[in-house]
Image (tube, rainbow, N blue to C red; front, side, top):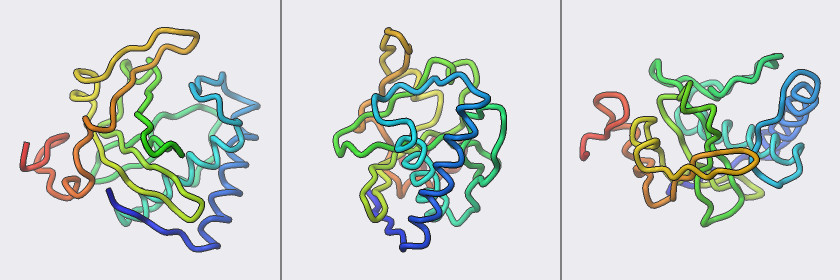
Amino acid sequence: MLNIKLNRHELMLCDIFGTVRRKNAMQFNYDRQVSKQDKYDMDIDGFKGEYIVAKYLNIMPDFSINEKKNPIDLYWNNNSIDVKSTRNPKGNIYITEYHKKKPCDYYIQVILHDDGGDIVGWIDADNLFKKATLINGSHPSYMLKQKDLFPVNSLNDIKRVGYPSSA
């Protein structure tokens, strides 16, 4: 687990940008979110997680505002990333069924705090859908336990898509 702190300007940027994304999403998109969290707080937290991962990987966050919902949060070394953020320290990753049809290359989990967050780990799409459990309900989604994630520091050791050198 890797802790990333954000300064007050970065936190304010995440708050503003998450709010703008929510206002935009309400106009154009069917909401597929699984959480019971307030939708504004969820989008603020979502962007905060993306910002934290982008800061760690030394890449630019995606500041675009689009009419279409895009499951890709970031690009890194020509690979797509979906950042999954939670405030629950024991929280698992939940991925909507839509992702099985159009998966990202990597899924990275961040546990958020008021001043930043902990990057818990990552998994590639192939391993995710092998290890995750399909949860049926009003919003079917795949659930992956934190223990099934690769350690965050192994991201830098990837030799081929989805597999650290120790795998």
